[in-house]
Length: 334
Image (cartoon, rainbow, N blue to C red):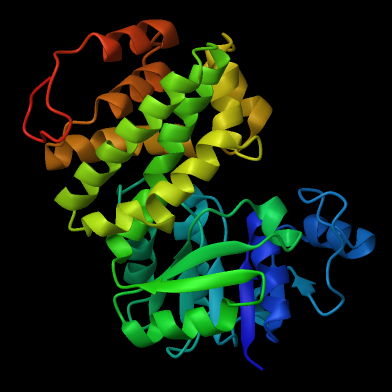
């Protein structure tokens, strides 16, 4: 039996921990907030996953010393907190043999780096992998059949993660394209925010289909420029994650976008919904598109709405009236 520690007691971290128990692992969830742990232990439920009972075998702690001897450590905190978590792990001097698996989707806000890069810089001697794909926490926790991708630059590391997290209800594939897997998971949050905006504006199914398809094209262009494999974006962590996040009410990004489209100020939306990764990713994707000189008009529109007070309906009209082009032409200019 392998020891797995999940850093973060949010819905997604708890869901993946529950699933890992079913794969005959010794699993502990850690949180920096003792009151969260106490509430979960006392009720037997995570309030972010209402009505779902925790397995009796799943352990919880707020003492980092309880998880530093794990064979696999999963980072499951919001993207902006990932650097802090891995700095804590580095300070705790975890073994070099421990594999770090990131399941958060986003970028390091200070550097614009992919999260695996931030993790590897803090823990240079540890192997790093990413576990990503179309996976709402609420459904994984209930045992809804789900497929994910374990990505790493090291094949054996990806295979270990695949073995440790695969269950009859959670199928894990492997992929060596960690760049493409991470970018798909992070930037689709911006497209999901935009999809929610179209829902709030009541623009219809045609609009959302166009937005999702052209958004995937933008993700692929940036991914290719950053060294990702184009095939990855046609897989689970590309189009798969995009579909589930743009169409489900489980998605906080979509829900936030709906409120924005209905006219609620962005600052208020963030307070209402909580962590909205697409909001943060819009700023970082805007910086990356400039760094890599990639055309991303939907990302531009989302950035303007989120950070420059752009009007959603006007931004939608602007996207529709841009110069015409060939669908596959990557060389055109705004």
